[in-house]
Image 1 (cartoon, one colour):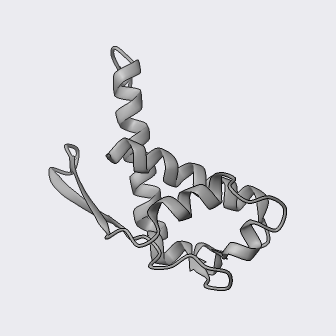
Image 2 (tube, helix red, strand yellow):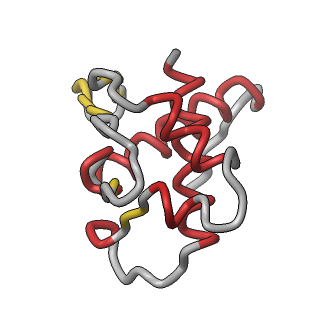
Length: 121
């Protein structure tokens, strides 16, 4: 489930930022049903919000070997996704946790694709 939500979440974030580029910070970014579906219903953003509307929050924990500690991340989903109820990025995942989550997922993908990483000084 982690990879499914991770993939869909970042597609959702990418599409919101790409199609609605008028926000200045993560905490300001919001969307709603009428804004998302102004042209056509059922696209990626709409599908994500409809699929996860009302789901309970999902918690992830990742081991960070460099720091020798666990990292905990929480993803929350909108309780409702109707015409004028705004869904904010900050209510789904904080900016700090979102960046960390994306780095962790990218690292996991890299670890499956790269045979060896050598650090040169």
